[in-house]
Length: 139
Image (cartoon, rainbow, N blue to C red; front, side, top):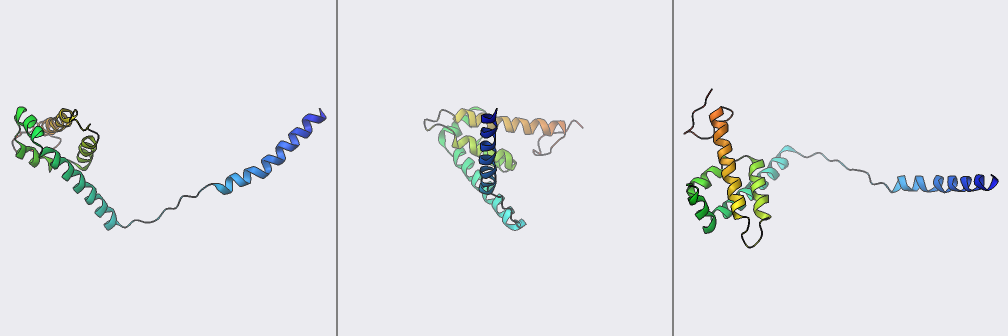
């Protein structure tokens, strides 16, 4: 019994020493104010980078051929890129960066672009958006 008490006291003293040291080692988060201009500038840079990456991808001859097989001209595809939201552009740009070098994922990215186009047409027809002038809303 006495031996257990001595061990318990020893562990307590060790914990009393090491807990404050552990707390002192914790890093504090530092928050700073960000002005609106720099935030908007950063967003614009990100959007321009994403848009240029996707446009470079669309300019490739293999991608143009796939667009033509779906009945979409490359010029029309480039025009539709400007109607995409920032999230959609970032998604496409991230997908382009993850494509293997052999071009294995070209169809997947073109499929994503076609999917977004069809989604925008459906939302235009339903009446949630008005992106394309050639659609009529059901509402």
